[in-house]
Structures are given as structure tokens and as C-alpha cells.
Length: 350
Image 1 (cartoon, rainbow, N blue to C red):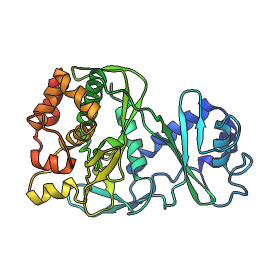
Image 2 (cartoon, rainbow, N blue to C red):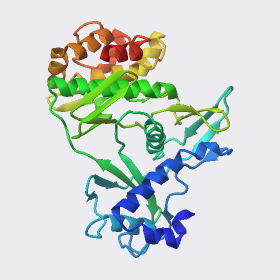
Image 3 (spheres, rainbow, N blue to C red):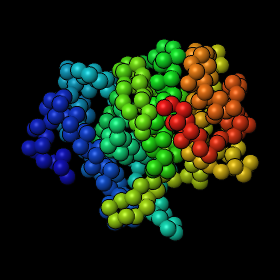
């Protein structure tokens, strides 16, 4: 394994070299499906130590050493503040995911073992690699992971920033949601839980052009994958591959509703309601779920309806200014979703 190389370990001493190595690790994860195997372990090349004397000393395993080097005081705390980003260390008490190839006609279906950790982080690496090839400006939470004493340690970027939902910011957020979802439709992207809890904000302006749409916003957003996110792509052997969590269905719950600063989740998911009604599952539910969930915030909703362009998008998606008052799932089920909502919403932004 590369992390057993003494020369490599001796170079991972500064913030720049460590962040660069983590970025390379995330890129290499995306190449795992180019191998012909029945089982795949996306994080098999990340550091893993079965025995570490203290678990917190820089003189122990490579994972602890790297985290100590990137921490200013040399101590591995739950939060590490770097020059430009803040990192959060978590220790999930779960098995690290692997993928099993499921027999399917016409394409390869790979599913992560149920109850495991890491599927959404693997999807994040895949999306980061693809979005970085586009003009879209966003950021990604997942940074790195490894095992110390066989215990999983995960490093994520955190922002802890919530913007003021004025009309300009709301239009910028909606624009970024539409553009990101439109780009990801090429990968048959299914978020699995499109609601506001998976949207993160960075206090940093963005400005770029995507397919003729000028995206400008005082804040940058990130759409985090959920444990139920699934994507498709074609590997080097021109095989069509679908990767997802191993469940009976791709669960979708865009129904986090704020009531008196508390959150409620309906028992029945939106996907279950749609299937009962015999309606098709289409790409549009991603943007509809995210925007409808955000619209439960009174400040966001007021600014959205006061902006002609964002109001026009809402009225196209949902036909009138009615908004969720109880359950986003019930609302989306009742209103339905249009087949061309992604393309038409993108056209409204032009």
C-alpha cells in the first residue's frame, strides 16, 4: 500500500501537501470500477491500522500522524481549523462499505452493503471528479478517511454558515440547484433525499456561465449526497454502471418541515406515494424536492415570491404560489412533477 511508503509519509507534513494528497486519494477512488471484480472496496488504499498504541500520538500510525501534522497544536481534536477551511473529525461506529456486483441485464449494477458507512462519501468523490470538469463552482464536504485500531475516522469540511435569504441570495441558491441537478442528469443522478438538510453554504460569491446561463450568487452552495444517492456512468470498457446503496428501493424523503424551529418527517416517503399513484420517477423531483423544502422557511419563501425570476420558476414547477404547510412529500405528490422541469427551469434562468 502507498501509505506504507516511508518516503511518502515523510512528505505529508504540511497543510498543502496533506490536502493535495487527500485530493489525489479522492480522485483514485473514482477509478475503482475500471477493474474487473465481483466485489469492490473503494477505500481499500486509504490508511488502515489494526493496532495503534495510543490512537492520538503523531508517532503512531500514519492516520494519526497525518492528522497530527495538519493540526496546528499537534493534537487530534474533533475540530481542526486550517488557514482556509475547518475540518471536523467523526468516528462512525459502522463497517466501511464495499460494493457487490448484482446480476442485471444490459448493465452492471453495483450496490453497497446495507448498514455500512462510506457510500455517500464514495459518491461525493465521483461527483467531485465530474463537476470539476465543468464550469460549475461548488465545494465538497468529504475530505478523507481511514482506520486506526480498526476504528473508522472520517474527515469532513464544515462551514456552519447560514446566509440571509434576501431575494438576490435566494435566486442565486435556486440557480445553483437547477444548474447542478441539470449537469448531473447525464449520470442518471438520484439524490434519494432531496431536502434542505443536504444543502450547505459557503460565504463566498460565485459567478460562472453554464450552458448560456449566467449564475451569480453572493453565496456558494454544496449539495451533499445522501446514503441513498445513486449515479450511473460508463467506464473505460464502455460498460454502463449503476452504483447505489443496497436497499429494496432508492428512498426519497423530501419532507423535512420546520414548525416552531422543530423538524418533522412524514412516515411515508415521497417515492412510495409516487409509486402507489403509478407515476414515473423522473429527474425533476431533485430540484422540486430541494426548492419545496427550502420554501418552508418563511424568509426564503417571501424573498422567492418577491423576485420575478425565482417566482416564475416556482410557478412553473408548481403552477401557483401554494407552498408546503405540512408535508413536502404530500405537497409534491399532490402537485406532481413535470417531465421537462429541469430543462425548462434552466431556460427561465437565461
